[in-house]
Amino acid sequence: MSTSTSTADAARPEAVDRAADVLSGRRVAVLTGAGISTDSGIPDYRGPDSPPRRPMTYQQFVSDPAFRRTYWARNHVGWQHVHRTLPNAGHSALAELEARGVVLGVITQNVDRLHQLAGSRRVIDLHGSYVDVVCLACEARTGRADLARRLEALNPGFTKTVAAVADVEIAPDADAVIESTAGFVVADCERCGGMLKPDIVYFGENVPRARVADAFAVVDGADALLVAGSSLAVLSGLRFVRHAARSQLPVVIVNRGATRGDELATVRVEAGTSETLVHLAEVLPAVG
Image: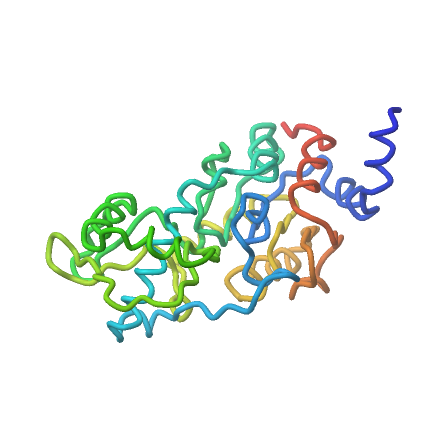
C-alpha cells in the first residue's frame, strides 16, 4: 500500500467505512442539501461557517413591490455567478453510483441543477429550480437566461456597478447580498404583464403534492436512505428521514455539523460530502 493511500485511510473517519458497510449491496435513495454544493463555490445556508441568512418569504415577495425589487436585483447579480457553477466530485460520484445501479434516485433540496449537469438521471428538484421563471397570473414559463437578458437591458451596467463596489456574497438560491437595490427595474410577464417569480418553493410555500409523492416513491423503492449535505432543518427534507426510519430502512447521514435527523441515523458521518461520496463510489459494488 502506498504512503498516500495509508495517509488517506488514516484521515478518513471510521464512520465512513461503517456507512459503506451499511449501504453495500443495497439500492439507495439519496437526499441532498446545500452542503453538497459548497465545493462548487455555492455557500451553505446553515453550515458551521455560514453567516446568518433570512431568505425572503413568499408573502413578502407577492405583497410588496419593494421586496420584489430587492429580490430581483440581488438575484440578477447572483445569477451571473450561479449559472456558471459546475458540479463537483460529490455530484459526479452520485451520478456514477446511479449508473451502477446503487443509487435509485436523488431528491435534492437544492435549486442549482448540478446533479443533472453531473449526469444524474432520476432527480427530483424538491424546491424547484432557478433555471425557470413562472408568471403568477397566466402561468407562462420562461428561461432564467432569457430573463437575464431582459433585466440587463432594463438595468444596463447594474451588475458591473455592484461588482466594482465590493465583493459580492452569493447565497444557495442565487441571491446576492448587495447594499442598495434602489432604482432597479423589475421585468413583468411579456405575455400578460403579470408578476414573475422564480420556479422555486419559497419559505411559506408548500412543495407541490405530486412532487412530494414522487420523492416518497424513490424512498419506498430503495433499501436505504443516504442524506448528503443537509442539516434537515426544515420539514421538507426531514420527513423523508422520518419516513425511512419508520419503514426500518437504514439511514446514513453525511454532514458537517449536527442535523435534526441525527437520532434517526444508523450511521452519522461528520465529514465533507465530496470526499465521502467519492470514497463510497470507489468501494460500493454495483447492484443488479
